[in-house]
Length: 208
Image 1: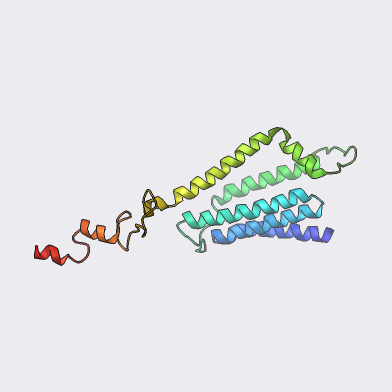
Image 2: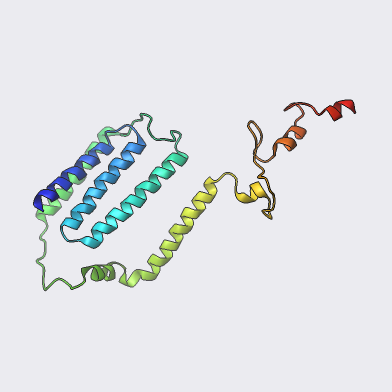
């Protein structure tokens, strides 16, 4: 178990370093996912099953959502083109080094309390009650708010909805989609009628 723990620790740190070495957002996203999966597996090794599974599930979903939004909104859709992944190098090194020193000092200088009593029969339930026992209603509301935010984001990211394409009553058989080089709200026939220079003239109009 000790060997597996150290292997996971090395994988976690190495994958975290890769995040800042690769030159694309897509590769950085999956490197971060690998690092966090190793952390979750390490929690499983030390018998913290709830936290380990929670980390793995949350990080998988979070990284997948990050990849989707990255592809949707970045000017580099695939996230594979070379780009600079590190900015303000000197400031980042100073801040990260100071934080590392403070955390390391805290680990060795803190007087950690000794465990008293026996561990509970169901540590998962006790942990859940300690974290969310008095805040269950708040967490439920936050969950609904997050879901509404995700749905709103998808709606805003969609340029044309079904009511734009099939009408307010959704009874239009063929969707009202623009053709190549046409405006976003007119079908081919209407667009050509509205702009006489776009497309061939109507023979009936010439004869009239």
